[in-house]
Length: 405
Image 1 (cartoon, rainbow, N blue to C red):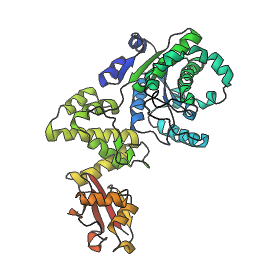
Image 2 (image 1 turned 90 degrees about the horizontal axis):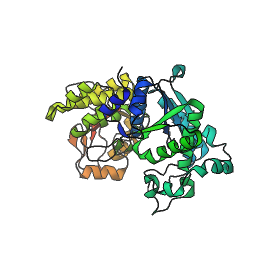
Image 3 (image 1 turned 90 degrees about the vertical axis):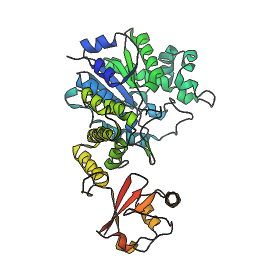
Image 4 (image 1 turned 30 degrees about the vertical axis):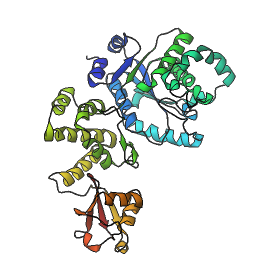
C-alpha cells in the first residue's frame, strides 16, 4: 500500500513538518488528525479548499480527520497574516457561519460511520474559567517566544491587542483537548499557521508528556507568488450563491499556463501521470489541460451536473458548442425597453455600478451581440433581442444573456 506522505509530497502539498518520523508513522499507523477552520464568513473559499483536499487525501489513505470549526477562536480572531485587527463578530453571526460551513464540509469529507469527526471549539472554549485557564495553560507559554512568532512579529509595529495575543493559547488548547478526547496526534493546516501549530505541540508535550506532530501545506499562490482565488467580485467562494458555478468554472479555465500543473496537482484527484502529460502541453494545446482543470474542480465543489452545465456554457461561447442554456441569464421585462442600458446592467448584477459601467465603456470593454457600446447614455433597444435574448460581453471573457420576458 502506498504511503500517503509520498502522495502528498508528489502533489506538492507538504511545506513543513515538525518531525522526520512523520512519514514512517503515516505508513505504519492509522492516525487521527485535525484541521481547523475559523468561521469568518458564511462560506468557505478556495483558500480553504486546498486544506479540504489535504484532508481528503489523508482520509482516502485510511486516516481519520477531525474537522474543527472555530466557533470559539472566531470570538477572538486569528492575527496570522493580518496587518490590522479583524472585525469583531457577534455570537449570532459566528453561529450562523458555523452551521453553513459544516454543511459545506460534508461535500468533501465522509463523516458516516465515524470515518471523520466534526467539532466546534466553542463547546470547550466558551465555558472556560479564565483564571483557571491562565494558571493551567498560560503558564506553559513564554511571552518572549511568542513575540518571535511570525504571526505576531508583523503586527507589533501597528499594534497587537491583548485579545489577539490569546489566540495562540486557544489554538494550542484545541490540540490538547482533541488529543485527550480523540487521541488526535497530528495537526494539519496552511503554512501561515506554523507558529500556532508549534505552540499546540509544545503544550501537549508539557501537559501529557506525549509526542504529537504537525504538517503544513503550501498556500495556493500563482507563479508570481500572489494568492489565487481573488476575482473582481472578491473571493472565489465555494457557495454557489456567492460565486456561481459558471464563474467558478471560468476562473480555473482562465488560469495562467504556468499555474496549470500546480492547480491540477493540489485541487483535483487527476492521477499525477495525467497531470504531467496535461501540463506539458504547449501553446493552444494547453487549453485541453485548462478544460480538465476547470471541469474537475467544479465537479468536486458543485457536483458533476453543474460542472457539465458550466462546461457547455463556456464551449457555447468560446468553442464549437451551440447551447446557450447555461450561460448566466438575467431576465428583463419588456417595460425596460428604452430605459438606460447601464441601469439595466447594474440592476441585473452584470456591472457593479454605473461608474464602473461608464469606465468599462470608455475602455471599449462592453459589447451587446458583438457590437461595441461606445455611448454610456445608450438605451436598451428592442432590436437587441432578435432571438429573444441579447448576449452581453463584459471585458474579455465575461458573458451574460439578457432574456426578454
